[in-house]
Length: 190
Image 1 (cartoon, rainbow, N blue to C red):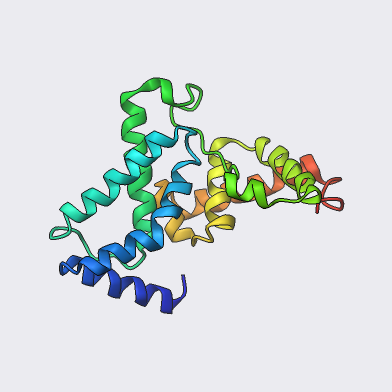
Image 2: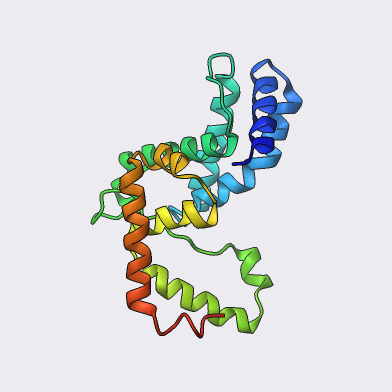
Protein backbone atom coordinates (compact mmCIF):
# COMPACT_ATOMS: atom_id res chain seq x y z
CA UNK A 1 0.00 0.00 0.00
CA UNK A 2 1.50 3.33 -0.97
CA UNK A 3 2.17 6.04 1.63
CA UNK A 4 -0.43 8.46 0.27
CA UNK A 5 -3.22 5.85 0.54
CA UNK A 6 -1.99 4.87 3.99
CA UNK A 7 -1.95 8.49 5.10
CA UNK A 8 -5.47 9.07 3.74
CA UNK A 9 -6.77 5.99 5.54
CA UNK A 10 -5.16 7.16 8.78
CA UNK A 11 -6.77 10.60 8.52
CA UNK A 12 -10.22 9.23 7.68
CA UNK A 13 -10.05 6.59 10.43
CA UNK A 14 -8.91 9.10 13.06
CA UNK A 15 -11.74 11.48 12.14
CA UNK A 16 -14.18 8.57 12.36
CA UNK A 17 -12.83 7.63 15.81
CA UNK A 18 -13.31 11.24 16.90
CA UNK A 19 -17.02 10.99 15.99
CA UNK A 20 -17.03 12.57 12.53
CA UNK A 21 -20.19 11.23 10.84
CA UNK A 22 -18.93 12.26 7.40
CA UNK A 23 -15.79 10.16 7.87
CA UNK A 24 -17.96 7.15 8.74
CA UNK A 25 -20.10 7.74 5.65
CA UNK A 26 -16.94 8.07 3.57
CA UNK A 27 -15.59 4.77 4.90
CA UNK A 28 -18.87 3.10 3.97
CA UNK A 29 -18.95 4.71 0.52
CA UNK A 30 -15.32 3.84 -0.22
CA UNK A 31 -15.36 0.24 1.00
CA UNK A 32 -18.88 -1.24 1.22
CA UNK A 33 -18.93 -2.64 -2.31
CA UNK A 34 -15.43 -4.12 -1.89
CA UNK A 35 -16.40 -5.70 1.44
CA UNK A 36 -19.56 -7.12 -0.13
CA UNK A 37 -17.63 -8.53 -3.11
CA UNK A 38 -15.09 -10.00 -0.75
CA UNK A 39 -17.81 -11.68 1.31
CA UNK A 40 -19.36 -13.15 -1.85
CA UNK A 41 -16.10 -15.00 -2.44
CA UNK A 42 -16.91 -17.28 0.50
CA UNK A 43 -20.61 -17.96 -0.14
CA UNK A 44 -23.28 -17.34 -2.74
CA UNK A 45 -25.80 -16.43 -0.03
CA UNK A 46 -26.28 -12.74 -0.80
CA UNK A 47 -28.51 -12.13 2.22
CA UNK A 48 -25.95 -13.64 4.58
CA UNK A 49 -23.20 -11.48 3.09
CA UNK A 50 -25.39 -8.37 3.36
CA UNK A 51 -26.22 -9.21 6.99
CA UNK A 52 -22.56 -9.76 7.89
CA UNK A 53 -21.50 -6.58 6.09
CA UNK A 54 -24.22 -4.67 7.93
CA UNK A 55 -22.98 -6.16 11.23
CA UNK A 56 -19.39 -5.12 10.47
CA UNK A 57 -20.33 -1.51 9.77
CA UNK A 58 -22.72 -1.30 12.72
CA UNK A 59 -20.13 -2.77 15.10
CA UNK A 60 -17.37 -0.40 14.05
CA UNK A 61 -19.78 2.52 14.49
CA UNK A 62 -20.99 1.35 17.89
CA UNK A 63 -17.48 0.58 19.12
CA UNK A 64 -15.66 3.54 17.56
CA UNK A 65 -14.66 4.93 20.96
CA UNK A 66 -12.73 1.76 21.81
CA UNK A 67 -11.35 0.80 18.40
CA UNK A 68 -7.62 0.78 17.79
CA UNK A 69 -5.63 2.86 15.35
CA UNK A 70 -5.94 1.58 11.75
CA UNK A 71 -3.70 2.53 8.84
CA UNK A 72 -5.36 0.26 6.25
CA UNK A 73 -9.15 0.47 6.39
CA UNK A 74 -9.78 -2.07 3.61
CA UNK A 75 -7.62 -4.70 5.31
CA UNK A 76 -9.33 -4.03 8.65
CA UNK A 77 -12.79 -4.38 7.07
CA UNK A 78 -11.80 -7.54 5.15
CA UNK A 79 -10.59 -9.16 8.38
CA UNK A 80 -13.80 -8.10 10.16
CA UNK A 81 -15.96 -9.41 7.30
CA UNK A 82 -14.16 -12.75 7.19
CA UNK A 83 -14.49 -13.06 10.95
CA UNK A 84 -18.19 -12.23 10.84
CA UNK A 85 -18.83 -14.78 8.11
CA UNK A 86 -16.80 -17.47 9.84
CA UNK A 87 -18.72 -16.91 13.07
CA UNK A 88 -21.94 -17.65 11.18
CA UNK A 89 -20.34 -20.64 9.43
CA UNK A 90 -19.21 -22.08 12.77
CA UNK A 91 -22.78 -21.88 14.07
CA UNK A 92 -24.34 -23.34 10.91
CA UNK A 93 -22.20 -26.25 9.71
CA UNK A 94 -24.25 -26.62 6.48
CA UNK A 95 -22.78 -23.37 5.15
CA UNK A 96 -19.20 -24.55 4.77
CA UNK A 97 -17.21 -27.22 2.98
CA UNK A 98 -16.95 -30.29 5.22
CA UNK A 99 -13.62 -31.32 3.65
CA UNK A 100 -11.75 -28.25 4.87
CA UNK A 101 -13.91 -27.40 7.90
CA UNK A 102 -14.09 -23.84 6.66
CA UNK A 103 -15.90 -21.93 3.94
CA UNK A 104 -14.47 -22.34 0.48
CA UNK A 105 -12.97 -19.20 -0.99
CA UNK A 106 -14.20 -18.73 -4.54
CA UNK A 107 -12.85 -15.98 -6.80
CA UNK A 108 -15.96 -15.74 -8.96
CA UNK A 109 -17.05 -12.82 -11.13
CA UNK A 110 -19.86 -10.41 -10.25
CA UNK A 111 -23.01 -10.08 -12.35
CA UNK A 112 -21.96 -6.60 -13.51
CA UNK A 113 -18.66 -7.96 -14.79
CA UNK A 114 -20.45 -10.83 -16.54
CA UNK A 115 -22.64 -8.36 -18.42
CA UNK A 116 -19.63 -6.32 -19.56
CA UNK A 117 -17.67 -9.28 -20.93
CA UNK A 118 -17.66 -9.79 -24.68
CA UNK A 119 -17.40 -13.17 -26.41
CA UNK A 120 -13.63 -13.32 -26.72
CA UNK A 121 -13.27 -12.55 -23.00
CA UNK A 122 -15.60 -15.45 -22.24
CA UNK A 123 -12.95 -17.92 -23.39
CA UNK A 124 -10.34 -16.29 -21.15
CA UNK A 125 -12.64 -16.33 -18.15
CA UNK A 126 -13.52 -19.99 -18.60
CA UNK A 127 -9.84 -20.89 -18.92
CA UNK A 128 -8.90 -18.89 -15.81
CA UNK A 129 -11.75 -20.44 -13.83
CA UNK A 130 -10.64 -23.89 -14.95
CA UNK A 131 -7.12 -23.05 -13.80
CA UNK A 132 -8.27 -21.70 -10.43
CA UNK A 133 -10.52 -24.72 -9.89
CA UNK A 134 -7.39 -26.86 -9.94
CA UNK A 135 -6.16 -25.04 -6.80
CA UNK A 136 -7.08 -25.82 -3.21
CA UNK A 137 -9.31 -23.33 -1.35
CA UNK A 138 -6.28 -21.92 0.53
CA UNK A 139 -4.32 -21.54 -2.70
CA UNK A 140 -7.26 -19.70 -4.31
CA UNK A 141 -7.50 -17.45 -1.31
CA UNK A 142 -3.81 -16.49 -1.21
CA UNK A 143 -3.72 -15.90 -4.99
CA UNK A 144 -6.78 -13.65 -4.69
CA UNK A 145 -5.26 -11.57 -1.90
CA UNK A 146 -1.88 -11.23 -3.59
CA UNK A 147 -2.84 -10.70 -7.22
CA UNK A 148 -6.43 -9.42 -7.23
CA UNK A 149 -6.45 -7.29 -4.07
CA UNK A 150 -2.68 -6.53 -4.30
CA UNK A 151 -2.19 -7.10 -0.59
CA UNK A 152 1.32 -7.26 0.81
CA UNK A 153 2.65 -10.41 2.45
CA UNK A 154 2.26 -8.71 5.84
CA UNK A 155 -1.39 -7.90 5.11
CA UNK A 156 -2.00 -11.48 3.94
CA UNK A 157 -0.41 -12.70 7.20
CA UNK A 158 -2.94 -10.66 9.15
CA UNK A 159 -5.98 -11.82 7.21
CA UNK A 160 -5.06 -15.51 6.81
CA UNK A 161 -3.31 -15.88 10.18
CA UNK A 162 -0.29 -17.68 8.68
CA UNK A 163 3.35 -16.61 8.60
CA UNK A 164 5.31 -15.02 5.77
CA UNK A 165 7.13 -18.22 4.78
CA UNK A 166 3.87 -20.20 4.63
CA UNK A 167 2.33 -17.52 2.41
CA UNK A 168 5.39 -17.49 0.15
CA UNK A 169 5.35 -21.30 -0.10
CA UNK A 170 1.61 -21.38 -0.77
CA UNK A 171 1.93 -18.83 -3.59
CA UNK A 172 4.91 -20.64 -5.10
CA UNK A 173 3.14 -24.02 -4.95
CA UNK A 174 0.04 -22.48 -6.52
CA UNK A 175 2.00 -20.95 -9.39
CA UNK A 176 3.97 -24.15 -9.92
CA UNK A 177 0.74 -26.16 -9.99
CA UNK A 178 -0.77 -23.78 -12.55
CA UNK A 179 2.36 -23.92 -14.71
CA UNK A 180 2.49 -27.70 -14.57
CA UNK A 181 -1.19 -28.24 -15.29
CA UNK A 182 -1.68 -25.48 -17.83
CA UNK A 183 1.70 -24.83 -19.47
CA UNK A 184 0.19 -25.44 -22.90
CA UNK A 185 -2.66 -22.97 -22.21
CA UNK A 186 -0.57 -19.90 -21.36
CA UNK A 187 0.33 -19.19 -24.96
CA UNK A 188 -3.33 -19.24 -25.99
CA UNK A 189 -4.79 -17.54 -22.95
CA UNK A 190 -6.35 -14.20 -23.87
